[in-house]
Structure formats: C-alpha cells, structure tokens
Length: 340
Image (cartoon, rainbow, N blue to C red; front, top):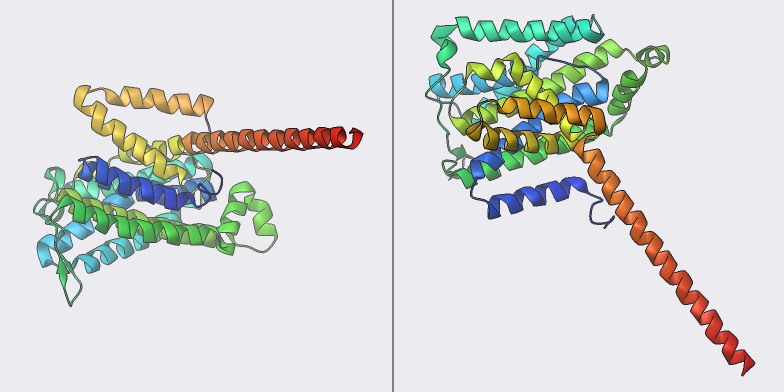
C-alpha cells in the first residue's frame, strides 16, 4: 500500500482518467482540473509562503479576459493566447505584490482585496472592451494547431485531455519550484520572516517572485476556463471567488501540494450538485468549511494520509506478529526434535 501511494500525483492523474472514462460528466471533470490548478497556484502563496491573498479572483479573471479578447478580436493561436494571458497576469501580479507586501497580516489581506475590487470595477466600467456586467461573449474554442497537423478541441473529451496536459505540466513545474532551494526559502519566510532575513535572504524579493509565479498559473487557469465555457463573466472577479479558492485550499489541506486539488474537486462537485437543488447551498459549504477548521485543520489530504499511515502501520504490525509467531513455532518444533 505504501509503495502504491508513494507517487501521489500519479494516483491523482489515474483517478482523473478513470473518472472521465466512467462518468459522462466530462465538462465537470475538466472544470475540476482547472480549479485544481487555480487552488494550487493560490496555495503557493498561502500554504508555502504564508501570504493570505484575497485578490486571486482578479488574477484568474485577467487570464480569462485576456484569452477571450485575443480570440474574439484577433483570433490568435490558442497557445499564443494562453501564453499571453499567463504572462500578462504574472506582470499584474508583480505590481500587486510589489505594493501589497509593504504591509503584513490582515492589512496585507485587505489590500489584496482592494486590488481585486479595482480589477472588478475596471472590468465593469470598460464595457466597450470587456462587455461590462454582460460579460465577454463570442469566445470560441479554437482547434489546436501544431503546424503539421491540427486537432479538434470541440468535443469535451478531447478538450479534457488538452487541459490535463497543461495541468500535469503546471503541477510538475510547481512541485519542482517547491522542492528547490527557492521553495525552502519560501517555507522559511512562512515560519519566521525575521530570521530568514537575518541569514541573508531578502523576503521582499522572494514574495514578489512568488506573486508572479502564482499569477502566471492563475492566469493559465483563467485562460483555460474561458475557452471551456466560451464566456468570460464579471463574476470571475467577484470577491466571493477569492473566498471560494481559499475554501478549496483549506478543505483540501494547505500543508501539501496536492491537498488543494482534492479541495477543488470537492467544492466544485458540491457547487455543481447542490446549487441545482438548493439556492442557498453556500450555507452548506460554509458549514463544511467551519467543520474542517474546527475538527480537521490539516484538510482532507492530511486525513487521508493519516488513515493510510495507520493502515500501513496496522498491516506492518500484523506481519511482524505473524513472523514472530512463525519463529516461535519453529523454535518449539526444533525443541521437540532435540528431545526425541
């Protein structure tokens, strides 16, 4: 069991592949991948650097609107649109980070929320470009043009594999960042910023860079989501979207790379199921959130890891007990043989 779950990311990908093969809701599973990437990009700031930002919805929406505008106005190549959306989001995230990290704690969180509202009202007022509160319509899902051949992305299953490819690349890149010396410095900043500065590191520079990296992947998630639903909505930038991403990370577990992916799957599933049958489903989501904060602060991922660790120890103890019993029985049989 321990060997099978050693590479957890491989298990996650296998589960997504099984889900898309078994269940008919391919669009929903694709949405889980996109919001999983968004939650992981947020957790890079929150879980690994200790920066509680309420401006992640702004970064998500910038990527979505950039991709949408490039497709609607210029019909650009899908890869160029995704790259442009991600880079522009990273640049704006750098500016937001450069200003916001001058403060700390709740003041930092409120400043990122203020930036989120600036982006929200900019999209709302810039009607001739963004569509205002009507959203940006006319976004189409272009085919994947690789020069030598073109692959249609109109069918949900093909688009799922397209998103899965970028999801895997992104998570592997983020994992490499976390496991690098740069990631170790981020953890040190989270634990004790003053001590990190005293040994020669500049926390401000690292925070700005992590803002850019997080913004890049949030913009990529926004770009993918806009071409999935073929629409960019003002609600992407609402402050509640930032709160929902925070809930995804906390429910899944901020102490691990993969916990936010699980949290995104659970929250997206709840939103899709309960919003249909109950208008006030957010009340249920709030109760679930409070429950995790009170009783399982490490999130679902930590609970699963604890459960698997317990089972592994249980099976190991049973194996050792059997081996001891077998050795004792051999000693007894040898004793009888010597007496005879």
